[in-house]
Length: 78
Image (cartoon, rainbow, N blue to C red; front, side):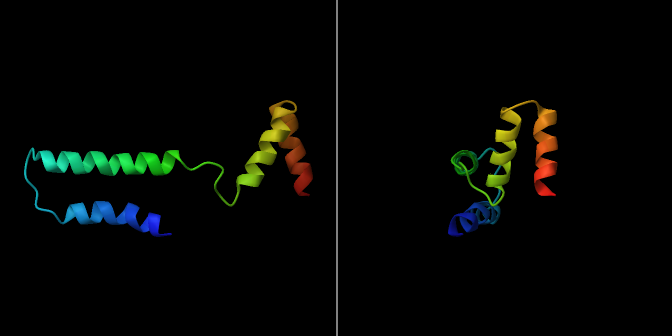
């Protein structure tokens, strides 16, 4: 959970810094903040509470057509 705190804290901290037009420091901070967001989003692999549901849907669809996969998922739930 601390990682999510830092994702919110970085832009908040930067927003309190004084604003100077064309300041190279602000451009570098913005770049690194964006880089941190890209890495955080990019390295999420097989994460989430509904991952098993999505993998099941993928398996059903991969074994046949989309129509067969969606119909079999509906039948499975009932």
